[in-house]
Amino acid sequence: MRRAVIVDVVRTPAGRGKPGGALSACHPVELLRTVLSALVERTGIDPALIDDVITGCVGQAKEQAVNIGRQGVLASGWPDSVPATTIDRQCGSSQQAVHFAAQGIMAGSYDVAVACGVESMSRVPIGAPTIGLDPYGERIHRRYAPGLVNQGVSAELVARRWGFGREELDAYAAGSHRRAAAAAERGGFADEIVPVTVRHPDGSEQMVRADETIRPGTTPEGLGALRPSFATADMVERFPEIAWSITPGNSSPLTDGASAALLVGEDTAARLGLSPRAAVHAMALAGDDPILMLTAPIPATRKVLARAGLTLDDLDVYEVNEAFAPVPLAWRRELGADPDRLNPRGGAIALGHALGASGTRLLGTMINYLEATGGRYGLQTMCEGGGMANATIVERC
Image 1: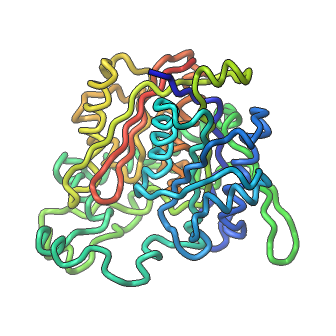
Image 2: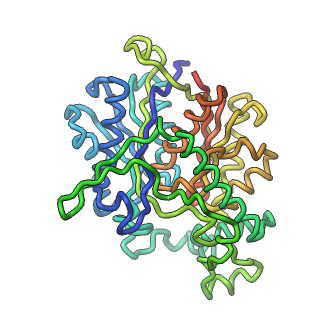
């Protein structure tokens, strides 16, 4: 079968996803344009050759409505002939974009494709697309009576099932900041971050070059002072077994950002003189209990390893999205994974989780780590709203 290879992956810095955050004055189309333009500049690809731009975005409302992928293409000055679509597999949206791009190349439908994602959580808050209406309907309410829960409550349920206490969750979160800060200090993110020029309403400009979400001085003791976020009266009554340990400190922060990857057929790379950095080795999807919601990376990982004919010991790094600290901790315990290979440059607790952009962000961080360490295989997996997960294994070229 034709092989899909990754020529380059870039991302913006992570900005705090609230008014006043470093990227909050930047329109999300401009965030997306920044990474799309950087791909062309860094690789020299003629954008007229791009068969499709597949864009992950969860909050497809307000400034992110009307197929933001197409708006990003037009804002980049690319030819009108370059099409784009915007997709939603919740937090795994841009990882799914990578899957769709790779599948199109492997099938011969594409020669060149861009997988990307964008989310401005300062402008389009979580839940905004529902405009206050019920997105589930009568049958789902009956099936999961007395009702589905938000992801924070799901994280509490995961922590309870696997027996993670507050101290362990906070220690993991502080470690994420420590690893990310150390990587940033060494220049570990320099090859993946492209700066963003932010134009403020007063006409001034600011160049944002570094992640705003990393807090180098974070300690478990400091995190221990934070109050739980999801212990509402009705949830406490419904789940009396929960200790209520999920806080802003052991969760991923609201984040603004964008990321993008250029994928081509291996034969196309040779024809165009492009140098692939990695190849898509295997892909898988899984669904799981939508109330626990965050556990699907476990079956997705088992499925992708079986499909690839590999074991965890064959992998040099695993990027498991840190939506909440219990997610990678449960994944690690269930699979017996090496903690030193898990998110070695920190994860979303420190680097942010710009929802639709996170999948390609993880991909870039993972490929850069493989290149820096001489590793061969990397795995990324992402929990997703509704109890789903993507899993991808790449092989460094």
